[in-house]
Amino acid sequence: MTISRRHLLAGAAALPVIPSLALAQTRDPSWPANVTLGTASVGGTYFVYGQAWASLVGEKIGLQINTQQTQGPNQNILLVQDKRIDLGMTTMGVALQAWNGTGEWTRGRKMQDVRALFPMYDTPFHFVVLKRSGITNVAQLAGKRVGVGPRAGTPGTYFPLIFQALGIQNVTIRNGQASDMASQLADGLIDCFAFGAGLPIAAYTELANTQDVAFFGFNDGELAKMQAALPELSASTIPKGTYKQVAEDQKTVGLFNFAITNKSVPDSLAYAIVKAVHENHEAMVKGHAAASETIPQNVTKNAFLPFHPGAAKYYREKGIAIPANLVG
Image (cartoon, rainbow, N blue to C red; front, side, top):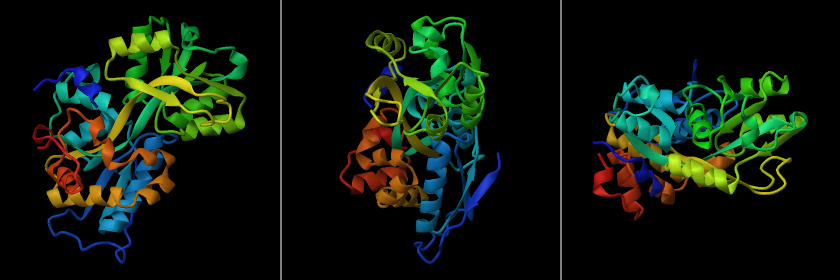
């Protein structure tokens, strides 16, 4: 089944995380001995958020959850689809491309064994530059070197499309881990570091605290052009004070993130993971502030990717309606 982008408008080394069995519930014998969660590059939110929820959930359900550094959402979906990892995280724009087999990175392959587990947080796109560069808006990035994180990440996928939609030409795209992009900006090897992740972004915070930098988003005309070309992008905001240099709210666009798994994962395991995440909300937020948006009500941010039956069971028990066509 092919789904239009407009359906969205509605809505490395493995690191072991050892659970504390004294605090954990009794393990279901149908579960595997351990599972692997794909995260993303060092310096990005997935890396920190993923470590936090792997540790928390592993402890609460009595299962060892290993985290594996990946290139981000695109690779996470590929690995989950092929059962090379058990759990992953993705933005819904990338997930839509995977479901439909669109986007160059899919090579026409439809990845429809992937299932949604729980909503994570919004990923707003924004920019950071060295203040001495004199760059103050996205139009000035024409002819510049712009780091966008890993090629298989959401920023690496979407910023080239954004520049195309805005008619910004001759941008030299650089790929690499978020922490590397930050270092390259500080060293003058790139002119701008454009990224998107849950706020605050660790690599941006480091730059804000160690360099004379400036942040910016988009103007109203740019927002309209982007959303016309890429309707899966929704209006978002970088709130005042996110970084010390951000003196007022900045307008931007973003994509919501969801935790994912393969449809073959036992229903009881999917249920236990979702339950542990939502019923330990304060601990999740301590792991990363972006988890403040990891709440059951945000399941509505997904309008196309089927929820795993175990996840849907939890939400329905909590009185949250999940349409039958979004479970499978």
